[in-house]
Amino acid sequence: MARSTPFPDDMPFSQRVKSLADEELLEIWEETQQVELMLNREMQAAISLAPEYERAIVEELRLRSTRGLCREAR
Image 1: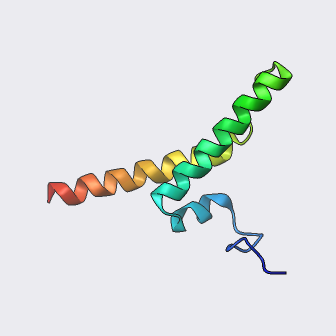
Image 2: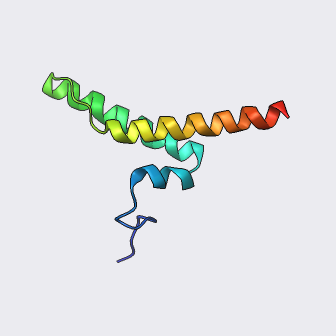
């Protein structure tokens, strides 16, 4: 059976995000938010599914945005 994950299992997510496109990062974030919202509704509790993933995605997108602004300013 083929492996669907393009990353080694031991690669931290904070490194994985560097090789993903913006759209992929936003899709991961959106799916995580949807699952989290569904679980919160079902369990009637405040659950944070993967705050470290969200933090890594936001930091990477912020870095990319800043780089883009710096290039435009030149």
